[in-house]
Length: 509
Image 1 (tube, one colour):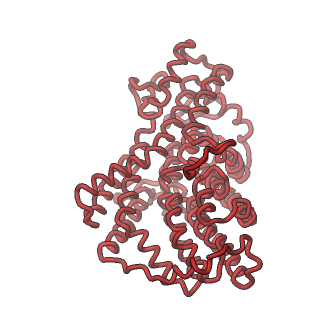
Image 2 (cartoon, rainbow, N blue to C red):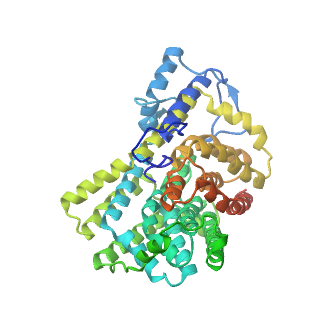
Image 3 (tube, rainbow, N blue to C red):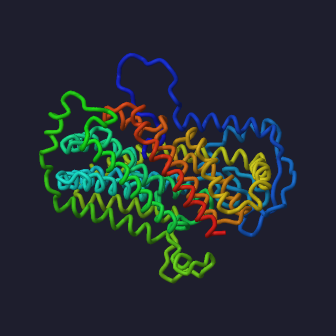
């Protein structure tokens, strides 16, 4: 999470030759310049908009973009600033730091990412989450299938609610010996870790780094579409666990069918798994309970309960609904971080340092969001966003809802490869994709679900993500072997995802 889309750090040594895929920040910086240059060639134009600010189908018309070359050069220079706190002028629609109107920049999401980063960092500093997973693994050590299912369920749950991904790299030292001790191989351990967390992120329900950022960029509530995403999470997690358990059982029954074999010393390494980790302390149990309550409250606060329970999108909210958005959620996680630190008795000095460290660790994905938003500002000010929409309007208008949902999923696959950062990908793509849902007559929440599914599916295997490349390195399994292991599951998941987004599009149309 904190290193979204970044390749794992390479060990010190002689400089390596060959191509290294650039970081998400570098990719987005290049995209900014390319889009700025293309804006000179793409005809400018605009749609008329309704009271909610959404484009009205069939009203596109050519409209000259303001400013000369020097003005456009200034737009490029200010793109990151506008991406953070640019304001959209109510009359002209132009975005500038000193304009008067509504906030267009991603300052709210930026602060939210830093806030949840501090919360997650404080939780890990207590050691409660690590210890809890260690205790779960040790308790189930004699029941292999249950162990795999238990660990994958916990990882998937953490993935779907808070984007738990890079943090899994710290668990290979525990889970690999456990799997070897039970007669499984290193690939079974790799699948348990990568696929457990990965399928949770793929089927994110309220993951702030995927669903949250995308929902904000699409202009919908974080809670919209949560029923479909929760059903996806249940089904896809069950399918993924079954796949890994079947492979592990096959290897234990016939070790010769292992895709990676066994390394010298594996049996000695397995003996280390017999050591029982310390019991959870009272403080650690309290911390875990606090974490559960915080995320449960977050889910409660963002769900539009009246719409969810009545099935009517325009239902009047109940009096007890909170309807929170990123401002309130950012405050929630800042307060929760302090609360966890106090509960765990970290002390003022350590808590302060951990909060600062958490914000620092999550500055990279936060900056990715800012850069991606800066690209959309350039397109907005050059009046080419509506031109791009108009070029696709004829394709989606009258398109069957089911086909539209699948199309959004497929279109996002190559984008997810180029921009493995979920937040950057969402911020960049949603301003274009979300209005297409209006033209197709389906809910924008379906676009969010299709987008995050494409991003999550790609990040289960692409070599541009630290979770995969760092994981196979720590487990000492070849990347080619991992691909051979995972591709049948990827095919099954792709089919299921298409079925879910098609169903969601039909139901919302």
